[in-house]
Amino acid sequence: MNGDCHKQASIIYKLSFRDRERNREISFEGGKKIWGNKKGEEQEKGKKEFLESLKILETELGDKTYFGGETFGYLDITLVPFYSWFYALEKCGDFSVETECPKIVAWGERCVERDSVTATLPESEKVYQQVLKLRQIFGVE
Image 1 (cartoon, one colour):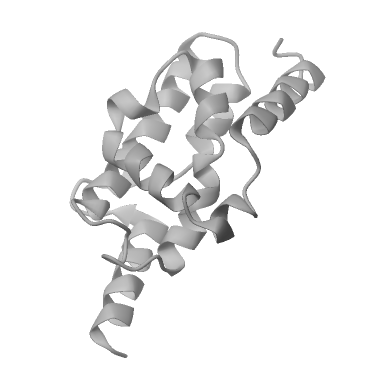
Image 2 (cartoon, rainbow, N blue to C red):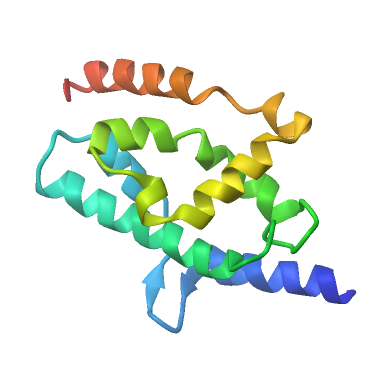
């Protein structure tokens, strides 16, 4: 395994399970708690969980262009679909991902500049409209 592949595999392993140094889980279940609940304790818990996961990712990203460095790679492909959800989660949870995790938002913006990403990701507004429908179905709205 060459150095870059090994580094990518190490990052994926770390992110797949937990940030062991701080004993924090990496999970996007917090996102469901944000859109799936009315304002209150459970939604606040979801925001905290979601933002903690993004902050772990932001630490891993550091000052690199992409998670693999200068090259758009497997980890970026795996994580970029979550970027489409940021707007919906911000609207439902009344917070700003950019304020809390500016490097992750900048990374997402770089990713969507790529034609291959733009062609496959849903627009953030469309995700938000679907989330509103789900909130109605589940009686959150």
